[in-house]
Image 1 (tube, one colour):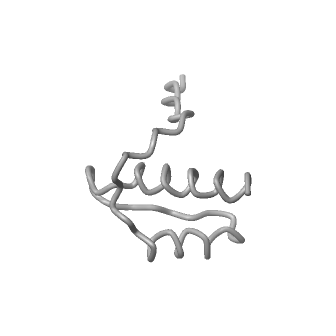
Image 2 (cartoon, rainbow, N blue to C red):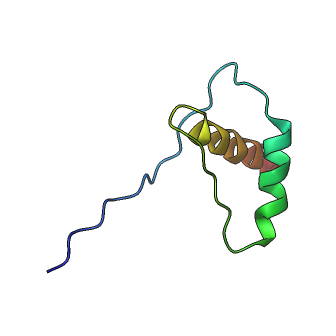
Length: 65
């Protein structure tokens, strides 16, 4: 008998009005776009979800230009 898998987060959190700029981390994310997998690992509260939300928001802005 197998245990059910937890459901992943399938929504994008809004970007904070005054986010901390992380250009180096965004560059590293962009560098990993051609790879099959990019692992983002940090303790709780270090801004992993915020970083991804910022990256997705910047991509949406670039796509509409």
